[in-house]
Structure formats: C-alpha cells, structure tokens
Length: 228
Image 1 (cartoon, one colour):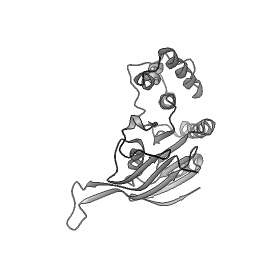
Image 2 (cartoon, rainbow, N blue to C red):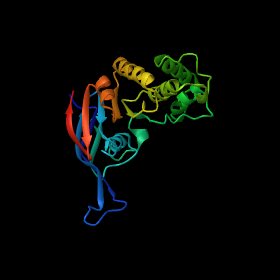
Image 3 (tube, one colour):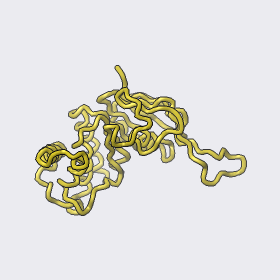
Image 4 (spheres, rainbow, N blue to C red):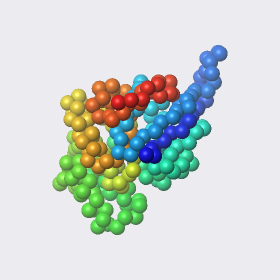
C-alpha cells in the first residue's frame, strides 16, 4: 500500500544567526528525514523544542520548502506546490480564528475561498459543527466561546474542506489539564470516525501515547525512532 504522506530524504537548512568560532554556520532543522505515513493513520511527531517537528509539518503543508529532498502526498510529488494545491489543512496552537466573524463564517471561510455555493457552504458548516459537538453555536463570536470550544471551531474549519491530511501543531497546549485530556480522547475518536490521516506535533509523551497509532521520535532534525 502506498503512503498518504512521504518525506523522502528531506533536508531543511538555515544560516545560523550567530555561529560561535568553530561552529557550523548552517543550522540543519531537518537532516535527511525519511518518513512514510499511511492513509487513515494517526501519527505523532514527538520531541523537544527545536528538534524539527514543526519544520517537518511545514514541509507537508507547503508553508516551507525543503533545501533538498521530496514531499509526496497520495503518491503525487508536491514539493514545489503551494499549500492550497495540496489538499491538506492545518490546526495551529493559536487557533487563528477571525475575531470579527461568527463561528459559522469562520468555518465557511475556506469554502468561500473555493467559491463553493452559499447553500452548500451552510450545509457543510452545520455538518462540521455537529461533528465537533457545537451545533447551535454558529452565530456566536470566538470571544463568546471557551478555550475548548474555540479549539473545536478551529477543527471544524479545517475539516469542512475535506482534506486528505490534517496537520495539528500542538493544538492542545493552551488548554487546562482536564480539558486537554478530554480533547485528546475526542480527537482520536474523531480521527477514527473520519478515517483521515492526522499528523500531530507535541512535546508531551503522554499525549502522544494516548492518541497515536505510531510515534516518530525526533531529535536534532532527525527521526531517531519510529514505532507504536
């Protein structure tokens, strides 16, 4: 079976901002990374800050491009393609909701950019709200919601466009401990129900173990271990 996502010998380098004498002037955020993620899999990139996990996510999303190597999504080489041509969506740590728009308008935003008809946008928005257990809240503004509800809105907005791959960059880190535990279970149940490939980034080992089918342990720009 071919992988839904593949990073093939991917490197990403940046000039070191202030190299010390004798230090390599190039910082390698990703160092010859090979990774295959199967369709319908929940894979977590786990590691400390600066290990390369968010950079790997940016390679998949198209927000950044490799210095060398290739990125494949559903067997297509997308290395040079912009994000909007990859059928991938992302949920950020900050949620990135528009404060002046209602919940419903936030969720419909991506569909509107795709020029989806208004009646179809509304139908899919309501369907997405139901999926994340927020039915009836489409007229509220983000500042009228709890942290957990805003997280669900961000999820609904990412899912409404029906991506092949959903990328999640430490999306639970701003939540309190109890809500975070509940959202871990909800996320895994949602992923299982939808069958979409989820790629999750965290530095929290317990979080990774609760949700993941497999975990890729990263350190210094490399995948040091990959397993269940």
